[in-house]
Image (spheres, rainbow, N blue to C red):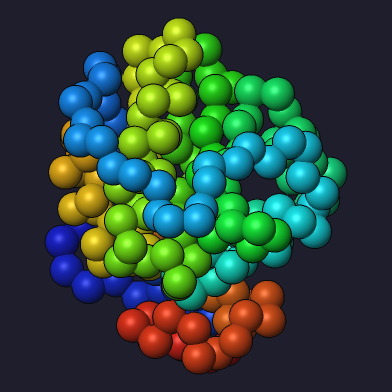
Length: 198
C-alpha cells in the first residue's frame, strides 16, 4: 500500500493510475449511425501481424504496448480463442477501430480494447462502436461488463466510459517499461507523458 506523498520510480519506466469500471445490467442507448462508408466487421482468427498492426494503429499514440511485447504464442492463445471477439470499423480495406470483447470468464465480458484511429476520432464513431459493444456484450449470458482505462489513455476515455453507464469500482497504480525506451516506439509519441531515460 502506497502512503501519502510523492514516490520515486525507476528511470526508463512509465507510471499510470489504472481505473477499473463495471456495469451490472444493460443500459439504455441512443441510436447512432455508423460513420458513412464504415461497417462493423468481425476479424476472425487474425494473424499476429494483422492484429498488431491494428493494435498499434489505434493505440500507439497512447503507448499501448502490452500486445506488442507479448510472446507470439501467448497472443495467439488469446486472439484465436473463440470466446475472444475482435471487431473493427472497416471501409474497403482500411481498418479504423479496435473493439475486443473477452468472454473467457463465465458470466462476464471484459471490454479488453476499445479505440479508434485518428481519422475516425470526433466523427461519432466512438459512440457507435460503444453501442455495438454494449449490444454484443449483453446479448451473451453475462451479468457483468467491465473495462480498465488509465492515465496514459485519451483524457476523454474515463468520462466517456462513465457517460456510457460504467461505474468506477477501484483504482491501481501501475509501473511498466516505457515502450519508447524499451520497445522502439517513436520518442515523439504521447508528448503528455515525459520520458525518463535510463
